[in-house]
Length: 290
Length: 148
Image 1 (tube, each protein chain N blue to C red):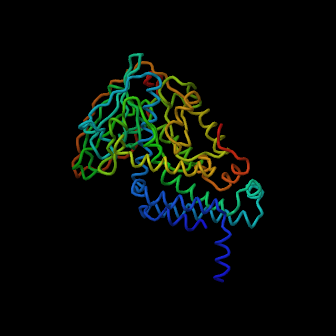
Image 2 (cartoon, rainbow over the protein chains, first blue to last red):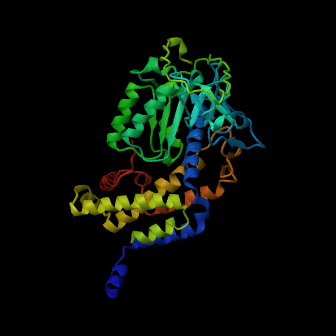
Image 3 (cartoon, each protein chain N blue to C red):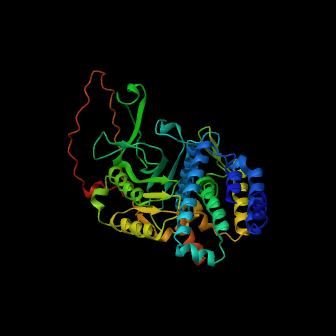
């Protein structure tokens, strides 16, 4: 038995032996650099998507300004629980005269129903968008502020998934697309313009590669909805730049939204939860913020 | 075999990441055994192109390691912007980590070192990103680097 094992080891492919030896040296030298927690890896991927979005604006000669820096450091908001006003964000100005805010982890209150709130990873907001703050008895017993921004102000909500894509993931992005963009209702069944100028249409960033079947699904979804599904981001943010001309875009135009500040006070504790009977508002063309 | 490589690469990983890495490797290796039993055509083509079972197993480990560990870091640490964000202006992700020119030097070195090793062994980046073994075998058989 032992002799057999020795013979097997002795007959090992030199290529395999070399890979093992070099990877052992790599791990010994660099393990401290690549050891991250799972949540940190997801955060790193999100940062990569955020940077690739900024690089896309750089490519279009837009002016990118960093706000709320802390001692020359960009304070990245990591959860929707934080007050977005205390964290850094990016302002984008284009030659068309419009300006927008690019933020991460900002909760969106859907135009479909006021109780529908959720947090896309990255949002492009109208430049004048306001972060609303209220207290909700159903959130931290009404003791902490609940921050959100109205879907009226959302130009594009992006989601980042540091994983291998699959059909259900692609299709589920449509739910967020419809709930986060007031202008979406008027655009279903139409693709956005394709080209290298304009804001990136709402995009699902996926880390892994897509198979041929997945590519067909993605192409079909992009044909029916003004969205992008960008895969292979694990290869680096340059993937987005390389595909710039193939991506769906929203025209820059001039941002017109002037978000109203809604102050919702905490309901008294004895208040019974309201039933959700509000009907869906009608969507007008004028609601599209670009 | 690939077991030694797997142990070496996963040794220092955070337990949740290591579990994901192990599960991913095991799923692909299981699929490999299944394809082997069925005399799968794609496996045959890959072997015909010089990718022995032993080599395919090595690629499986490297693929899982890259997809789950290095890929997300590549996205963050190898993407720059003209505004200097992520380089001159470091991005501070809570108290966990910082993406910046100086702060990210170690991670970048690790990424470049890994890339250097795999390129030196004739392994294409695309092969380390494909999600399924069948895709990997097809790419190996065609020497497809995913350029399209």
